[in-house]
Length: 355
Image (cartoon, rainbow, N blue to C red; front, top):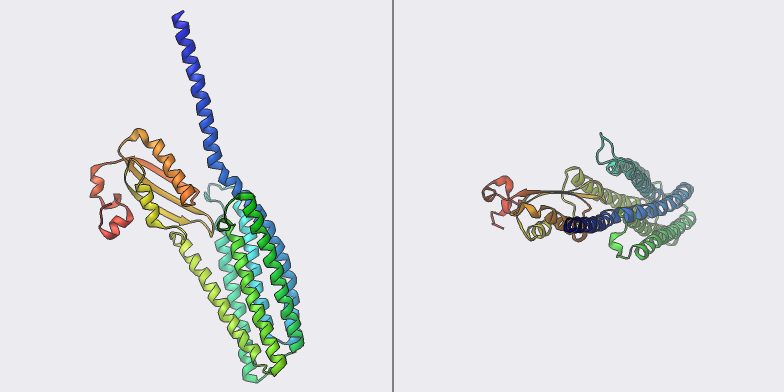
């Protein structure tokens, strides 16, 4: 009888253990996948928003370029060229969002996340070619003293540009507001493609204001040199904007630490985890403009706490530092790690300061 009672007790304990493990597994699954589900929902909404803005941009580019030709205004054509560069950026972002949903394969283990980077590089080349052509036309007009500009058509076209940019800004603003209400956090976590699109639209809005101002100056004073001068000014703005994008592309291709990640704080947070004696091979890099990855080795005293340490580190990396793709290797701490240059944290190597 006692044996049966003991056996039943064991079975009951096993059932309780299984239920507990199932609950833990479910909790971990929710924690692990919750971000992915939110990210997918956010990306789909971002895609719809970008498609709407791309359609509006296409309509206006055709109208503005036609208006620029009719008004013989290089400033308006430059503005249309700037908006064309933004349209290319929108299209690249849409393609990148769709490609990011494509499954990885044995040749592309990270999937197609860097398609955005390749597309951005191509769009930059197109922008530089277009800008160079417009600058050459502006120089030719100054040399030939050819300043025939229809100020009235210029004012109408520039005013339409201001209106279209306001509408596109409101579309993107609506996405950001809807995102904040659904996700329950700040605008800082809005899809990076939408943030970039909003900056592009803001730049276009300022440029359209500049074109409108130049048109009014030409209308009132007859100083038609304002048109090619605006072309030079806007070309410089476009080039400066593209240089910042090239800088971002450079750091991504060089596997640089993303600007929004404080490497020192991240390293100190990992070293502050109970039981972690040291760390090494901490690498943080960008897969694209939005996705960040991390790999690190943590050395601990008690191997039996490896799983617990890994869970704590994973949550810290994910929720405090916003990195959702992390590879953490737990290893036994050895005294030789204090003197091995390959087993020291990066800052300790650079400064010689013991942590």
